[in-house]
Image (cartoon, rainbow, N blue to C red; front, side, top):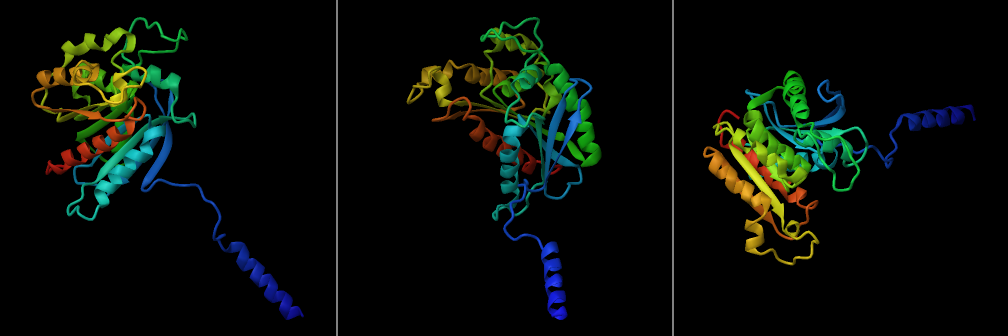
Length: 298
């Protein structure tokens, strides 16, 4: 009897240290890490998520910065991982994907992104009548360029000549503003469904600041079909509506202003404003990956 009790105790002990075979565990994103970073420029806390895909290159990781990171980091990092891992890729390129999000636990922090992504302006009569902070783009850019990039370089090592920014909606507006006012901020820009309409298209006042610098390699501007109709009822966008859209006309302006850059406009059928973020992220990550492949120093 005593021997039997000892055997039971040993079995219970082993069960106690064995992992439960079917217990739910927190999900993780492959090769990713995250932490909260405070900015002295914006006085905000940001959820920074980093995916390091492949071994660190000699010149550091090429970086893809993804705005609205809470919503889009997972998708962007997965597309980058797929580019690296596909069987047909004989010489895969390493990438770093950086999601810049907020600590709200939601997909979008509307007040924070409104402040961070909109260009400096003296006033903004909000269409809803509910006033929120706006015009913080310069401070948010300083956070990325001075604080975040320095931290990433110190901790992981990044390539200063391969920096891609992906932004949608207000994030696209932020990208356009940087192209105009701070042209050398990034090497590749993905500007999805940019909110050019914001504050009576005040961002266009900065277009004379565009510098035709060769460091800007690729610019992708995208628009969803149903964005051409405010009621989202158009089954098929007309050519006239497309060519008169702010996003398309902006792509033509940038082609003229930036002769060194490869400026591309993508029209994504059957997508609304919000939905257009997803094909744009795929197109943008692929663009950044191909830009790296084309450069022996990447």
